[in-house]
Image (cartoon, rainbow, N blue to C red):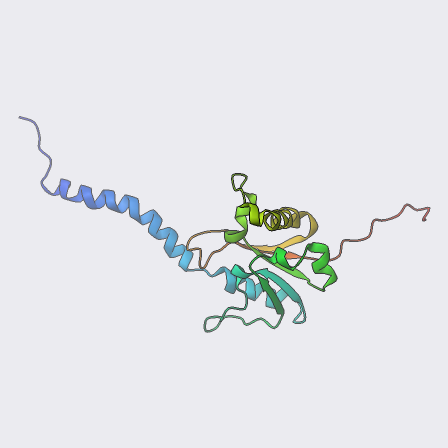
Length: 176
């Protein structure tokens, strides 16, 4: 006759398999709830941008949302639109005195998905916004970034770009 498994071993198999499939996902959530991208970015802004700085943001960045107890409240002025691109292109933002732009990957990622096709009535806005998000990294310097991770309410993938005027092209030693 063959050897039989101890009676308690099959009883552990179900919980063991369940543990294997739930713990990694649960750890991701625990890790995600342990950080708040908005609070981290507010602290960075308070430490690195002047109090008079003007910031433009995607509405989902929510920098001016009521901070939790102990969170940094910004002294900088924040302009918010559903899409920061609705405030104008980078040149227009610079001309209006905007020093930094905050984009939210949770929302703007749609503009990088080649399979997305806008409805006819919103195609022009979609293309304008898509152009803004696609060209922003070439026109401004990324100064702070967080990854898009779950839970998206706390980790929406924020990125702050500084809109400093590019240095004028240097002329040759001969001038003119």
